[in-house]
Length: 410
Image (cartoon, rainbow, N blue to C red; front, side, top):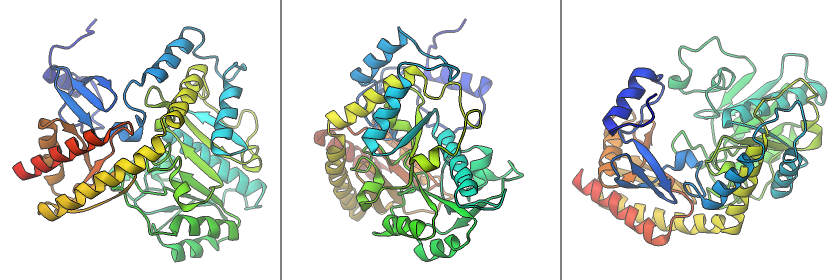
């Protein structure tokens, strides 16, 4: 049995030969992580400025989270939901207390949590809003990213995620993002049960809506008796400088969808939180997952969230994000290739002054890799910068220097 590899080249060749070609990774093969750092198989050290798409907000292999994983793994890992466990109820209460909701349901991936949210909203629409059978509509925004399941891509406008995978599921209406007039017009339809939206569109290139959009969306949903469903899989858990990105707007969504960093990147854990009326629409046998809410996931999730709270990562992300954006704004004035920077907290992106179908952003990321910083482009001409929230001010400046140096060389 092959258990080790001799080089990065061998690892990439193995993936190419035996794996599906559904990703286009940066050409680096990683085998160790700690805090804000990653190392490749040859021993080169890098700053991580992607954080597994905001899954490792607490830093790689945080010792407290790993200890919780080890301790629980030695006792009980999985029962399925055929039986009770001594961890699930504790974890559900913890989540509800932590975020201020009546009920929680634990799943695994962010996409699975969004699927769960869609089912909950539809069931509520039929049983509480009296929408005719099979006519419920969920409103979504253009350029959204809620996952890649066959249901969710039916709500997508991204041809890469969508084309060639039809037929698509009905029941979605797609409107412009950051447009309250378009939202209100859509919500006038009495068959609308939910509005599913990201408070910042991460995968689309860290699009931050105008001030008042998220709060206005919540108010419109309340006005038209529609569930405001906030996808915080990437923006939640202190990433944007608040525990939830919606907190910047001073509102409480009717439903939040969480994933990624609620486990600190240690294992797949996701969750949907909402009120009793919405959650209790689903009865035994109507939804579930063998691994959803397993004891190992519960233990890891609770410790991961405790780390965020104890280390005050919200305020730290807010402060470090301001420093980073200030440095990037200065670089926009210095380098012709940089058009603008946008973001909140430590979820940021730089738009490269090129067309979306160019390879410039990719080539810059490859060059940054050579200089010791890992980031990834999205939509051709946008580079997302999202380091673990434990990054220090000194490290932020060191990384900005790497970006500056790379662009000067480029």
